[in-house]
Image 1 (cartoon, helix red, strand yellow):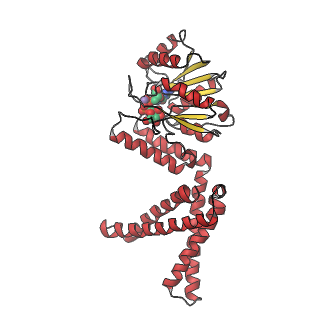
Image 2 (cartoon, rainbow, N blue to C red):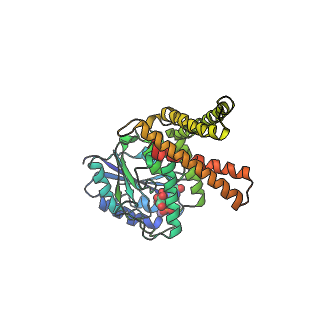
Image 3 (cartoon, rainbow, N blue to C red):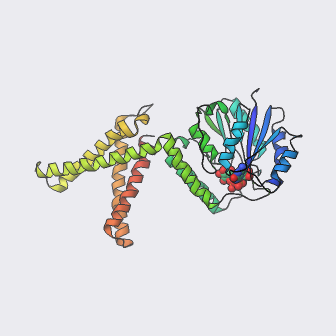
Length: 358
Ligand code: GDD
Ligand code: MN
């Protein structure tokens, strides 16, 4: 492959990792045309000096930002200085083993335009993690899969060790918040063929992790921003609007059938409920999920049935929670019902997004 490879490595106080890191990256890339960009946020431990002193041994550029902090924005900054057509991103602390880089390159040579090093496919893992770190990681993953459907095919979109063709970012304006630069690149770039290759997430060999609780808040902010920029926030709002229209259909029909149709209210209610489910379905099909309506094996009737199952289960959940909160937890029934409605709403939305209009 003649394409040049740029490996971008953000650093903050990683002095003792730099020499072994550069040696291992250089070994993994020997024979390739490549450069390494260290993007440092003004470390005070000597990282910059160590890295600069190795510039005569390795093709490494050291870029220092004086007034900014942040892993993801450091990578974006590095991109502006990178001259390769193929870009790799990895941590400096050797938790991302450089020996995996040739596997990433191979995936690109085989036709992928983005490749993610993955802990969560066969052959990958993080064997030294305790239970709580595992749970936090899985919850973060679940939230991204729930809120950002295009991340669903990727088992490990959050690890920050990945490679891509720069061309995929040609029109992209990157505005990441926090740590998850891989999510930003994957969702804002245009990549047709994203694959994963396995790796083992190693223990940190020296120095300390910079991850802190503030980053979890940043993660949520970043997800919200990505939802806004990819249209998923708009979709959620459309789903809300359709749900409200369903309340009107339901109330209206209940009233009409009871007052003018000669039915008892408990019979009218059954028609009213089903009518509102159907009207919600049609609106969601043509409005909220219009982009996911067509495609192979996607039948209108199957979607209608799935939506019915989802909504009826949602009603069951709402009713069950109302009883639970009121009679077991002693919460006022009107408050209980509001919580139950919120949970049922989320249930309906996620089932619609994950199953009915997948
Ligand atoms: N320039 C710069 N500025 N670099 C930073 C900053 C910063 O503010 N904060 C962290 N880094 C660098 C570190 O020096 C290291 O090279 C890399 O970013 C990862 O930082 P760690 O502090 O070691 O993060 P971690 O190990 O807790 O988290 C990593 O693993 C997670 C998977 O569990 C990151 O790769 C996460 O993105 C990943 O989700
Ligand atoms: Mn780390």
